[in-house]
Image (cartoon, rainbow, N blue to C red):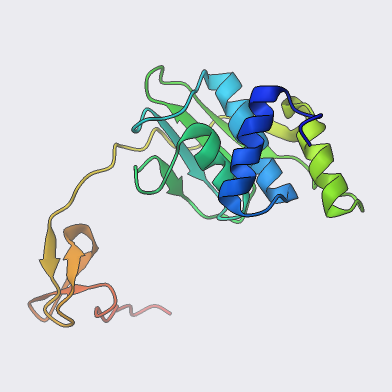
Length: 182
């Protein structure tokens, strides 16, 4: 596989495979999206929240984005807006630039997984993705919320996930949602 990629990109790909646990076409899509975002927005490896990725999928490619760009759920710069699409919005907080990369038509086209993966890794990024503007602005920095004990189950819960029910603070698992519309 490294014959397709240059030395530094080959190392990043191998680190992505190691982190993910196996190589696959989905991982290759996320890898190429991260490499393309790096090129388009001047991104490096995010030490904190200077770069943000909002992914519309929770599939394999997200792991490569974590490895290549340093976006992670724990840091607060990898956010999920699940829509079932192989689409990724990237933001550079330092420059204010952003881009949404949407994977074009399926890359497999009757090929084996291995052939599809090789094709994805060899394809120019500009042929793989439609480059669009995100339909939303830069997400705010991650916030740390106070936690309170749910008065039903006794578990600590961040305040932004608490609800009031019968005058008690309750977590989402204990909350009985109410709607008159079904």
